[in-house]
Length: 68
Image (cartoon, rainbow, N blue to C red; front, side):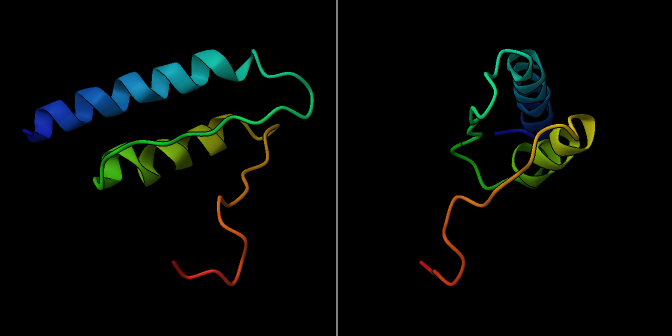
């Protein structure tokens, strides 16, 4: 995959997340999962989404203390 493709996909993912954020019911959960290891599509998108939506509280997928 080319770097240009990664950034285009990250942009699409960010737009999708922002679009569905307003559809969450009170107490609902939004799970962001991707099948990539690139930061542009993982932490960069998640961090930007969290900053843009302070009304939503991020939580880890794994219980703390679990390492695998």
